[in-house]
Amino acid sequence: MAVPNTTTFSLRDVVDELGNSSAGEDLKECFDIANPALFDPSYEGNKDSLYNFRNYGGTWGTYEDWFLPSFVAFTGMQINLHDESIMDFEEDVPYWSSTEINATTVKAYFFGGGGYRADLPKSTLAHVRACRTFEGGDDDYDLGDSGPAGGYIFYIRDDGGGVFTYFEISATDISLASIWSNVDDEEIGTTLDDIGEGQNNTDEIIAQSGHTDSAANLCDIYTV
Image 1 (cartoon, one colour):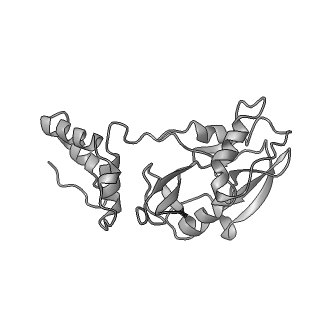
Image 2 (spheres, helix red, strand yellow; image 1 turned 90 degrees about the vertical axis):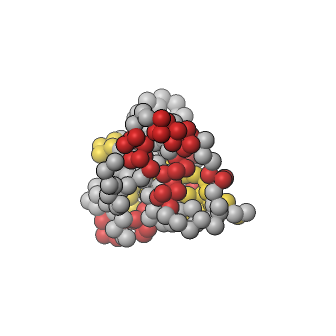
Image 3 (cartoon, helix red, strand yellow; image 1 turned 135 degrees about the vertical axis):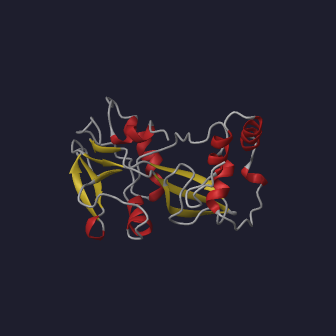
């Protein structure tokens, strides 16, 4: 077996190298039945290695729970990812949020100049990043860590009782030129700003009568 590059090496490399050998199949079975609850909550080792072990099973790499982030979510991306040079965003183009202003206009976000809001018509073409959330324990991930779906953690919410919600943004733009929605002259009225409203906003956009195409739908069907 080749010596791995320690900066990119993961347990996936081990299985890929073993192929369909009996050892490889045994290792796959081991990962398939691995349960995060079995890990010591005081674990302080390499988080990426822990993530690789938790997620190597037969469904590894399949995440279908994405949504279009609300406007306030971009503040977390700006401060914790962009300004820390952890992730690249285009600075001179708008990114759609899932927060509308009225029947024809939506809040979009620019990462340039320290980050700022732009109010754009729903028919404008803008970039799209997908977001997802998942629950975990304290210190499972830090801000800026690579998340389970290969994106980056940009916000962590303490839900109490030792439960935390982690917000992960996709590693790349999923569209460079998407309209906000083909329904561009009717107000939904229930899409909110708060960082935890992205999933509800996405659902409301897709459920709108006459909807066939939107940035929200691109996120909803996104799989990685």
